[in-house]
Image 1 (cartoon, one colour):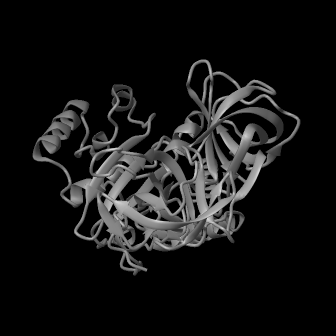
Image 2 (tube, rainbow, N blue to C red; image 1 turned 30 degrees about the horizontal axis):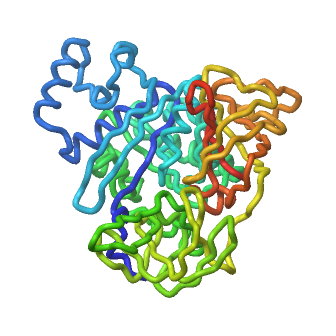
Length: 421
């Protein structure tokens, strides 16, 4: 498979999660500081802020804690996105809050991530937040977790302390659906094993955090088997140069499309062949996730936004009822049997909450049955019924065709994010 059109291969999106004061923001600050991703004026600003606060060392957490309330409390209460790069790879970081009342923020930050960094305080070991954040990462289909056991300097860089926490997490991770887990002993404050190899932990022979982030393989995370192309827009220039051009623009959300391929249009079920694939006026020999392209077809078929091109012998499920796990994002609680607007890929439909099966206690991961009141930050298994058929896969199979959002029709606010089972 050619990859010259694959624009995001060298981009890794990752999220950080952990309990309050586990050092998430400090870790990100250390990554940016030691990779020289900070401008001189930024460094001077945080040096002055650290001095005013009376901090003994430069407070690298100030690089990510952008809100005034966060700086005053020394905690993260919103999702802070940061960008940095090394010669090997580009990175987008989502620094998410640790408090239980900001579960929705972690779901937001982790929804597009390839990898999650779970921080554990070496003094405290695994706690409820560790389990909660790991469960959410697993629920959101993140296939790579790096467990950073932080503040090793406060336990005298003890190998025994590291191995004890590692063994506990390995035992717990048997309940997760995460195939790739790494363990790294670090000190974000001092910089041990973040970018540079620690001089205090000769017993650890693995990679530093940056080396792990640079080398983790994410190409296999994309679905190149199940061809899915939700149509976002019909392109009809009707110009002198292109009087009869009719193309369908969108982003490939799975599989590989090539000129000459036979495809089926959903929901009509009509089959045709691809005549050409374009990207920025350049004709391509193939297109695959997550490329944005324009596809032309052999026959003049009535296709509009929300329709989907698939392979005839490999189609998604088509149904009006969808079973899913949702995270409720809104201050206003969910209305029983309530009506909402559903957005799935480029498709929109009215829907109704048909049934709430159970809520998840995100501290113990136990099911809470019989409690059907859904409030902000709740994670719930439920069934929706839409006004028209949807074309979907399970979230486990395809993170894009397997997810959706719910919108309040009156306020236009996004009230929930869902993962299809």
